[in-house]
Length: 434
Image 1 (cartoon, rainbow, N blue to C red):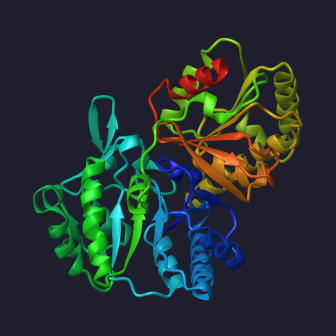
Image 2 (spheres, rainbow, N blue to C red):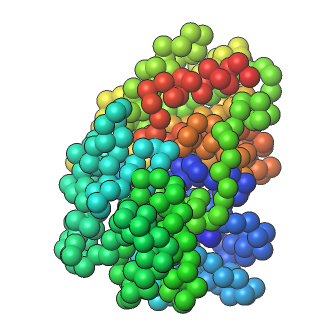
Image 3 (tube, rainbow, N blue to C red):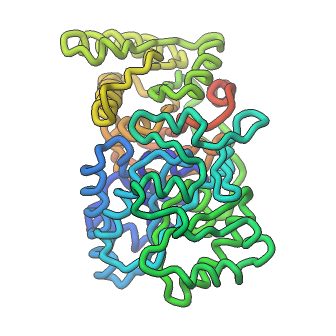
C-alpha cells in the first residue's frame, strides 16, 4: 500500500514502515522491493496551490506505475488527507487517478479517525470537543481560509466540493448498520455495484466498523474491483494490516541523557494555541516568540531570524528545553492563494531558523502539518525516515535517516488539530523526566 500524505501527520496510526520525501521512479522501485506492508510519500500538497498539487500527484502516479511495472509489483494507493476534511478534494485525487492511468470502479472516502475523535454516523462527520460531538461544518476547521466548507453530511460535502457535478443522491453510503448487521458480505455486495468512479462514503465510529468494511472491500477487490482511497489515518492502519502497538515510552526513543529539546509551533488553529499556553505555563522552559509581522517584512525578516537563532542557541547550550512559536495573530490574506503564500513564508523562516542553529537538540517536536513537513525536508534534509509509533494517540514519532542533519534524532510530528489542552505539555514533561 502506497500512501500519498498531504502533510506529515498521516503516520498517526502506523509503525515500522518508512516515510519518503522524494518519489523518483528509482526511489519508488527500491522501496517497493523492500516489501514493507506499505510506505508513505510525504507530498505536503496541502501547502500548495491546487495546480501544483495536481502536477505533483500526476507525477507520483506515473512514477509509481513505472516503478511497479519493471518488477511486476502490484499496489493500491491511498490519498491520505485531513480528518477534518481540509485538502485539495477532488482535484488532487483526480490528478492522481490520471497519473496512475488506471480505471477505478470507485473512490472510497473514509475520514473516520478514532485517535483524533472524528466519527461518521448517518453520513454526517463529527469531531469530538470535550463531551460533545460537533458536526465538522460547524467547527473552526470548516472556516479554514483555503479549504473551508459548509456541509457536515459527506454526501452533501462531495456535492459542495465538486460544485454540483456529483450530486449527493448519486453517492453510495456504507452505513454502520451495513457493517454491524450485514457484515463483510453486505459490504461486498454494495461495493461490487460500484462502476465508473462512483463515490462511496464509509460510516464508522470504531476500528471494528472499519475492519468489517475492509474485509468486505478486500473481497470486492479479489473479484476484480479497483478502488482509489481518500482517507484519514485510521483507514491506513486497517487496510495495510498493521497491528496496533502500545504508545511509545520516552525510554524507547534512545535520547541523550542531557541537553535541551526544541519545540517549534507553527500551527495557529485555536486548539494548538490552547496547547501552547499550557506548555508555556511549565517551569524552566525557554520561551521564544517569533514575530510573524516581522518575518513577512522584507526589511525586518533577516533581523528577526538572527534574533531568534541567537536566543535558541543560548538556551540549547544551557541544556534548556526551548519552545519556539509564531505570534498568535492570524494573518489570513486577501484570498486563498495569498493565505497559502503567507503560511509558506512563515514556514520558510522557521526552517531558516533551524538551519542556522548549530546546537543539536535532544529531541525535536514540530506542531502543525506544513511546519512539520518543511522542517523535515528543508530544515533537516530528510529523504527517508522510519515511523516508530506514537507517543500520544495521533502523535507519531519518526527516527530520522543517516542522510539527515540530525541522524537518529526522535522527530515528533504533532498535528495541529489533535490532543487535549495538556497534550503538548504532557509530552515535554515526560521527555524531560526520561
